[in-house]
Amino acid sequence: ALSAESIDLGTARLGRSRVLITLERGRAVFDIRELAAYGGVRPEVRYGAASRVDFLLTEPGLPDAYVEVKNVHLRRTGDWAEFPDSVTLRGARHLEELGNMAERGARAVMLYVIQRTDCARLAMAADLDPGYAAAFVRARARGVQMLAWVCAISPQGVRLCRPAPVRDAVDP
Image (spheres, rainbow, N blue to C red):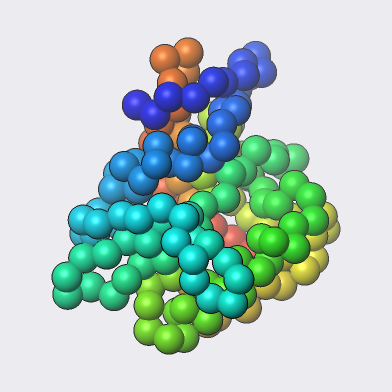
């Protein structure tokens, strides 16, 4: 299990880490089945015009994978987690940089870590940040892989639990 503090909301638990201490410095990224084929991980690698990617994954015979990780806490409707919870120009820039890497032949992944036990899927909060929502749609069209994982949160810690579907917006 990944270690992190949690908040008990009564009906749900909420993780309180900086994205699970950046996915426990890279080890937990291998728990994600879509990334399990990679053996090498380097955190905080400079790339693009002026960015750092959370993780660069490497494996002989596979394209390098640039993985950016975002923490998700917002829930407003049903079991939908939403991102972002406020305007994030930096987040939109990360999507643009990942899109550039995908177009150059690298694997580009945006990983949303849902640190709520009452959410099962993820959507973009376009009403809170239309710019990020538009950047998300553009990045996906350029080949950026969008992944979301829900965490199991208990007094013993926080761990990645299961994948969640990712949508452009909350379904009605």
